[in-house]
Image (cartoon, rainbow, N blue to C red):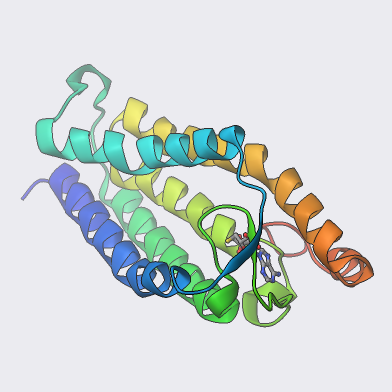
Length: 195
Ligand code: SAH
């Protein structure tokens, strides 16, 4: 097996593991009543960009090898780093889902009896789930030896993150008031102690 296809196989396994972690939360979320919805057209655009850059385009590339002109030689080091980044991403993703529990939503929503979670990864950063998406984008760039696919994940992530993060924090502030303000003072957004 070539180094390049090893990277692609690790990417596929990572995405499957990602869905296995998410699926039970998606099912459970359907049963928890939503009391406030800040879903907007820009949020749908952000989700679509992330889906395209982090799933559709790399899956298409793995299946067809297109765009071949953007391929570059894969390195075993890059693949190893990508595998490590994906493992970290899945760990953070699982931890933050467990911690958010019934408060999780795919878009911006406040659920019935919504509680502000400040434990686990949320003690350090306000958006660990987005941190896990950033790590998956980095993993994709290392695992798939193609410039277009490598960059697409990071762009998809950036569009989702920057379209959403201010709105999400505004929604949380409107809902939780001073409690969220204090929480913001003691945490960063996606990189502990830095940003
Ligand atoms: N931005 C968070 C959560 C993403 S899921 C993260 O990256 O980990 C999006 C939903 O999570 C939003 O609808 C919001 O209602 C909820 N949410 C975000 N931060 C929260 C927190 N600290 N406690 C409880 N719910 C939160």
